[in-house]
Length: 476
Image (cartoon, rainbow, N blue to C red; front, side):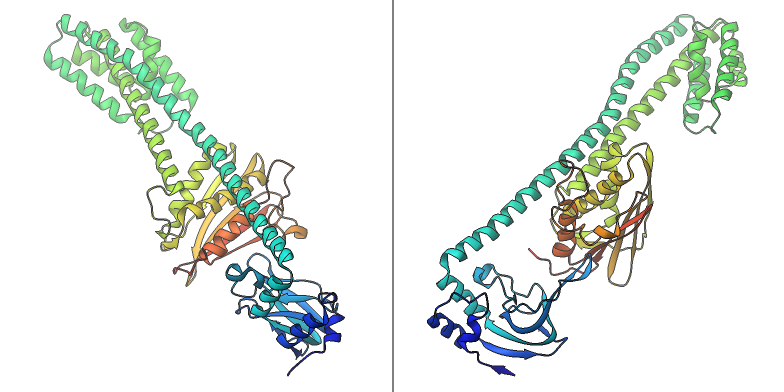
């Protein structure tokens, strides 16, 4: 039931205590009083923001539905004049279109309801300076938040760039070293082949030698594993046999031949087919040819690693891609893990458990990679030098489920409800801005219509991200 209100009753409320009789009269004529029973909602979160509500008498409670912490309830209050509903209506077109909270009567209550448009007009007309101050405070806070967001992104980019540079340096240095050795090996190999020709080795014996070299290089990387002691014994045995044949630097050549599976039987075949007089030079050329193949394999492996890292970096940054599209979330996760490789301590193992039946998801790939970066970075920080980082995926009927777990000390129950708050951090001063999880929350919930939550006990912490498999109506 709706009724009007007397201006004397309005004057008792702290919000309106300094208004003139004329202003109070206009205010009373603009709104209405409505009675609510205990447990009845005055305004509901998500519904169109149409009214500014002020408590006259009774008791109310403000509730906020969040993704991370469920329903967050503020303390009940019976203070006349407390308010809720369309509190930002004075912002005009920039005000939220829906209520940002639920206001519930926890006892029989009388509420003064003022239409949002009337409230916006009254604030602008009666309190122009206050309105500008409030507007500036809100805008300034938003700009500060965006500036810190950008700094957080740049900090994360710097961390990832340092790791990527370190990862690229290793294969690049290996390739440079291998190419340097290749130059000298190829030069020596040519000279020894020329020496064999000058010594009059028959063409058919030279072909036998080349076939032996092909057989040895084909074995590279395919031999069953041997212990260091077994390898050392084999090198000593072959080195002695080569030395008896008169091969120069026999002990230097033996490791390359053993690495290619060369044995005493193979040595006898070379002696028989090539001839005793040509065997020393032939074996030296064979060892150098095998080393050349090994160096080429190292160069190939190093360049493939560089290509893989660049591919991961491109996937991570989503270069040359539309901002919103259907992507395989496993590619995004793998690229983030690859970017982190240089930052993962030797004592931390990475385990992936992917549900490959998970279909592509509609998403902003680059932004989701920032979510994975924040979650993995926090997990690695929590574990320190040892532990297990686990990344797994699953899906139900209409949601993709991505979980990132660690074996760190866990999130204390006392702060679980606060970890997604902006600027809240448990790290030391200067080590974190407290915005990583807040940014992740807004990307998942605001941009993708999903949810992110945490469950944690000491030694077993999981951040669970749920994303819709159908394209949501994402917020700008």
